[in-house]
Length: 239
Ligand code: VGL
Ligand code: ZN
Image 1 (cartoon, rainbow, N blue to C red):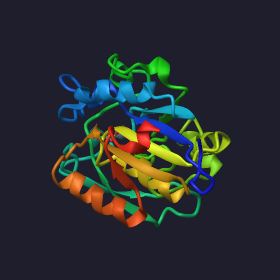
Image 2: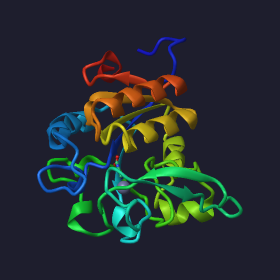
Image 3: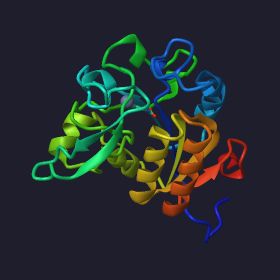
Image 4: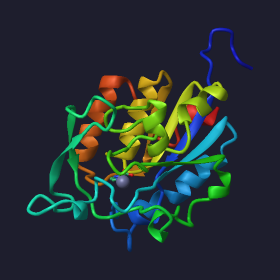
């Protein structure tokens, strides 16, 4: 029975980018041990507490700005090179960001972009595609790297308005799992907090591109914006 002054708790689960290209042995941007978290994510998907279960899919055009192959030497080494990326929003082109370059990955409609078969995707209520605009990186499903979410740009970058979906379900708490802890999981959780949800990352249900430094950096950023790091056996998930 809910106590009078207990805060409202309407949780959602966001399963980020559990796609072939992020998984060994054949993924072009394989994250170490990525497949090993699938059983845990499936058990989270089974929990009756979630008001909505959303999956995300990195879904890039072949000419995406984050692909090293779309840049010229010597600054086009996957994982190593960074380029200056301009804000594609009208009138904002002078705003730039450092963009890490990646191998070609998750090209729209290719096998590398499919959700791995180990995930029970029939448990997902919604699948949101992101990173569809060639001009800009989009790690978070809520916004691109410049935090643009104006409809004209967003329509080219993402196919679902996840914030609106969560609000429709009156969600108070967003739990984020999947790949990668130091990129798309991190930015999705941070944006959820900024959007006004209580935001949680379930630590044992994510894996990082750079498990040492990348995760330490993520923890520092979580602290700044109030993202809570938890574990799959925590009491919050047992209500
Ligand atoms: C991701 C690098 C490039 C991720 C996506 O899903 O974390 N990382 N694109
Ligand atoms: Zn990507």
